[in-house]
Length: 440
Image: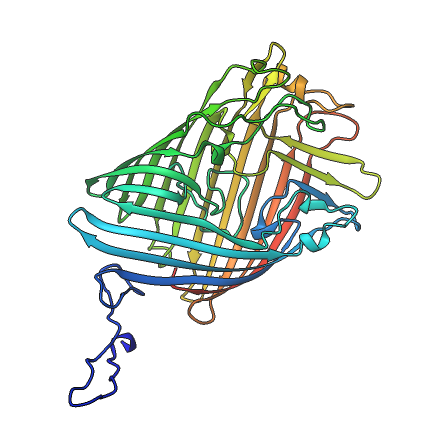
């Protein structure tokens, strides 16, 4: 209640100044206070974290290129991040008016190792030595406008610190949206959103996975259209969702020399079940997604998951090409198909300890014609591949708002193509993180 404590003004003349104080706002939960002289409630939050990743990128992300058992390759990522959030709300005749801002600055050692002759898992990585905003939006009368999570997302993977390869969750980077949510009562709601198509593009190619592509995405003409139907109740929550995505390639060699546009799509379903009978705060969450020509909803990872192992010279490689579409003979777009499932369970042992167990699996499928375009020299066979992960995280909270977590994950990539220098790969990645939280 210290924020409510009056501060005496200094008496000047016969009339002392009025008492001035900060008043607690209890309408929206802990941490809010009234901005003096207004009816707007404000909450400041954020966190500071330090972490180290082994055989993974920042925040345990699956790397685009990973060199295993190579002493010249860079395989550790040391990273720190500071973030601040500002949540401002006020009541109107149309309901709550809310604006939310999440700004963060991140630094890691990828830029300081850019000269490594074999940069390994940080090939093409960004050091993020800058300020950026994963979220910045306004909500009013059911409308949401700005940058936030996609309205397709359900399993945001709170059971892990990683930025998972599989699933529609993009690791908190956000996407620009204009959306409307209708509330029907008893926890039932429906949303429809126009979302920035560039935030959901996985890529288009007309070259093999080691070649230089002359085709990319053209400027978007139609935003992604995303819709969901959701229910939130005491037992948990569930959602069904769908998305339409325009696949539109650039011109090459002339104004009209481009494939015809195609429409990709995705649908999914998710469920979360609270399990207080097993532990206070326990829950199980899962999501399934299937897509054609809209692979960002199946996997939010790199457009080409590639794993290399062994010392010099490289003797075995596993490839996982990921594209929304491949330009095939006849100058047409062949849309990629794929599906994924993610899920996890988190158990709270007591107020200080919690442990999660989670897994993910996905499969990507190309036609024979598309595979023939993608196949690298010296290889044969299909471009189809699958990849699965299983991991566990334990978090210790010795004092309130301080989390120390240790996480390990086993990965297995069933490679695309066949050949003498190709083979399935498996590896273990790990992460240790310390994070000091204050109001989120």
